[in-house]
Image (cartoon, rainbow, N blue to C red):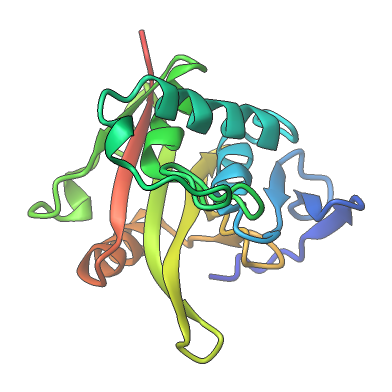
Amino acid sequence: MDSGAKPEAKQDGEGSRCITKGSGSSSKVYHERQRLQFCLLHALNNLMQEKGSFTRAELDGIAENLVRTDPNKDQWTPSLIFKPHHNVFTGNYDVNVLITALEARNKKVVWHDHRKGASSIDLDAAALVGLMINVPVRRLGGLWTGRHWVAIRSINGTWFNLDSDFSVPREFQDKEKLIAFLDSIINQGGELMIVLQDE
């Protein structure tokens, strides 16, 4: 997925980067790196292309509010660490936090139907902000399995995989490569969500 132009990266102390493509290009790509299990936080900031667009405190607050307003909360087993929508220390936020956080920014999240291929997504829709994918992952030699949030977004007409596990964003050569990637995610049990600007 190399574009041929060597990106310049400027990193701050918190693992976020602003990548500038090519010499003289004004195309900047904001990219946060993975820390603990805060992939949803990083994916949301990568999607919005802004450091601090979302914060850990905000996502924790959303998760706690989801618990307070759930009519079935009395059926849960109490835990100081493992909460219904996140882990207090490491993050690991669920889809309910994603949807609520984006709705607070006037965005709408639409689940992509697994039965349809990625080619059914209108990648040129004016309201399209980007895509969020949730993929199964195995770490520590397969001893730990979980899921990982990733933002995919078009920036100045170029689609990028903004995975926080990557040291730098990866550019898709064209829409066909993006569609093939998304189809492979779906086929491997990944979830695909379309993020739209709400009216």
